[in-house]
Length: 273
Length: 117
Figure 1 (cartoon, one colour):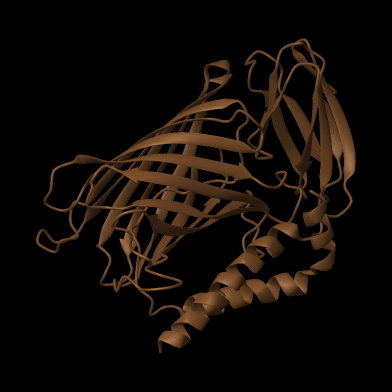
Figure 2: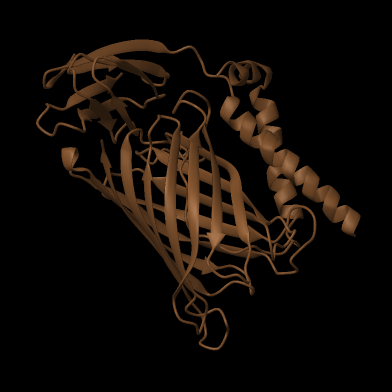
């Protein structure tokens, strides 16, 4: 990637620090902006070439029974395969149940993850995520979600050596609705996960999921949402028979617009062909 | 107020893009290279030493006609090596210690170790 290489020479660490600092400050300054639909699924920028993946993601919310924020459920089933080392397409079926409503099929989604840098070659690993979601209800709008996926493996955390590497993943995903019934807002979903790589079966950490209603154009007028909580990630290797992975997390709502808690989980079976 | 929001939004978007690119394009130091092969059901060498605290590259060549997968939880690497081809992995900087690796497609291939000193 010659472009990135020349850019790497031109960008010293000081500029990177300033950019990241500005990012934090600007994010804080945007605190008044409102939220987008939450999606509690973290995407990783590293592609497992030639692997077939069958994945299940789910989340359910907890709050007071009549709050309108209790028992909001979401379930997905995904099937993906990486035919080349830099691209993994996936097809996904989504089921949702809003509080007090029955579970119903809500969307069919075509996901794409692109690995843009060789793992470990640069300061961080960079990927790009893009999906198109076709909704089942004619009252809703299809949408496109896209944005960068950034991952950094570190031998310590803020200078403290925990005896194990730490892995930090950031997703910054923008949503644009398209077609009939679309809203012209541009919501931004932020997902952050930090975990300690203790052993393959047990990697504890924490996650943050934030939703800002619009970073450009009109606002949906909804309040922003912030969630933070512990997470556990692991895998069981069956070698030539594949691999089973899991993730589980409990997210505490950090503001009034957010439910008190959300339980999320993910199971994945993958096998290389 | 609307203008202020729009301006902040644009600054935010531009900053995000810059931060993402800058973070991933930071200069990579020149790395020492180490090579190993997979032949039959064995890594050669099965154990070797690399400098601790320094980024290194590993070239893994698969001499078999069938694919293998170089995998290491310790290194956080997992990459398919198709038959008769090779891959390059960027690893580290590693803290001193032993890092296990194995062929994920073959449970009975003896596991290897990279020792960082």
